[in-house]
Amino acid sequence: MKKVFKTIGKVIATVLGAVVGILAALCVVTLCWGGVQRMRGDVTNMLPETPADFVPTVRLIAFTDTHNENENVADAIDTAYRLFDSDPVYAGVDGFFGLGDFSSIGTEPDYAAYAETLKAHVRPETKLVNIHGNHEFKNTAEYQALFRKYFGHEPDTVTEINGFSCIAFSGERSLTEWTFTPKSLRWLSASVKQAEAKSNGKAIFVFQHPHPWGTVYGSTVWGDPQINVVLNGHTSVVDFSGHSHFPMNDPRSINQASYTAVGVGAMARFELDVDGIVGQHPERYEDAAQMCVIEADNDGSVRLRGYDLLSDTYFCDWYIDDVNDRDSFAYTYKNLKAHDSKPVFPQTAKASAQKDENGEWVVTFDEAKTAYIVHEYKLTILDESGKKVFAKNLVNDYYIHDPTNTASFHIGTGTLESGKTYTLRVRAESAYHQYSDPIELTLTAQ
Image 1 (cartoon, rainbow, N blue to C red):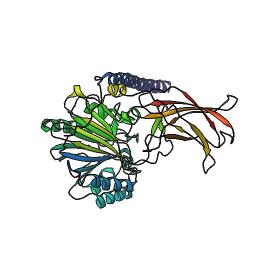
Image 2 (cartoon, rainbow, N blue to C red):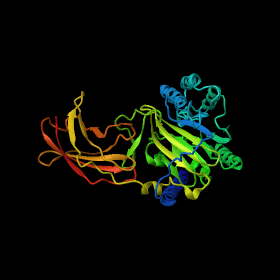
Image 3 (spheres, rainbow, N blue to C red):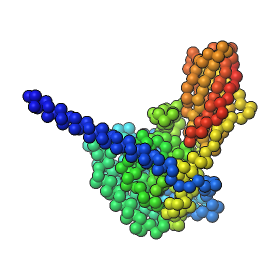
C-alpha cells in the first residue's frame, strides 16, 4: 500500500510540476508579448484622418454580445439601413456580422428569438453571418445543430462580399467553453492563407467572439491566445471580436502589431477595469448598444467607425491607408500612447453634492479633458477637520455619450451630512495612465 501511495504522490508531484512549468512559461510569454506590443512601430506627428476622396467598395456592420437584447439588434440593423441607404459616396449595407453571445446559455428559445429578429429586419439582399460565442458553447449537446437549424450556414464559413474574403470563425468547443479544438484552429489558419492568396491587395476580414489575447482593451483577461497565434504575421487581416464587453470608444480597442485587431464593444452591458482589475460594472453599465461600421476599398484602405445606438452618434473614426504596409501602421500601442495627453481640469471647476430620490449622495464636478478619454477619477473627500470620509477610484462614464461636461458619482447614503462643507480632492487618469494635477474643490452637502 505504501508503494501505491508513493507512486500516486510522484504522479501528483509530476503533474503539479508540469502545471507550474506551464504557468511560468505563460508568464514569460505574457511579459515578452506585452513588451513587444509596447515597443512596436514609430511615433507619428498625427493620427490618420479619412481622406475626402475615400470611396469604399464594401460596407459591413459588426455587433457582438447582445445577450437576448434583441431590440438592440433590431435597432442596429434599422439604423444601418437608415444611415446608408442614401449615402452619396457609397449607398447601402453589404453584410451584417453577429459575433456571438446572442443568448444566455444557448437554449433553443434564445436562438429562435434572435433569428426571428434578424429575419424581420435584415433585407433578403444583404448578407447575414453569425458565429458562436462562449455562451452558446454552454449548450454542449446542441450548439452546432441549433446553429445550422436557425442560421442556414456552417458555424465556420467564408463569405465573399464584393471580392472581400470575410472569415467567420465559431470554432468548436474544446475542453472548456474558453478554448477551441486544434481542428477548428487549423481551419482558421488555412482559411486566412487561402484568402491571402487571392486578396489582390484587399483587406481580409476575420470575425470571432473572443479577442486575440494581448491586443485590444480587455484582451489580457477576456482574450484567447490561440487566435493570436494563428493571426500573427498576416498583415492584411483586420480582425473583429467581442466577449469582454469592454467599450469600443476606448482608444485601446484598436491595436496594430502584425495585423489589425478591433474590439467592437457590446450590445448589452459594459464591463471595465479599475487599476487593471476587471469585472467592474459602474453606473449605467447596462446602457450598452455599440456597433462597428466597416468600410474598405480595393487598394487596401479601411475605415472603421464606432456608432452608439442609444444616442445615434459616431464616437470613433479610424482610418488605415494600406493594411498591407505594416511599417505604416499608426494604431500601435506605442503611437496611440504617444498621442495621449495629461488630463486638465478647467480653471473654473466647481463641485456639488446632493441626495438623489433614494437618499444616496451624488457628487458632481466639472470633468477634466484629455486627448482621448478620462478613464477614471481618484476621489477623496475630507470633512471640515481634515478627516477623510470617502476615498475611491471610480470609472468615468466615458462609455456613455453625454454632451454635458460634468462627472457625477454615487458615494453612499451616510457619507456626508447636509449643510456641512467638505473638500473634494480629484485626480483624473487617462486611457494610457497619464494623470492630471490634483485639484481641490469645496462643496457644501445640500
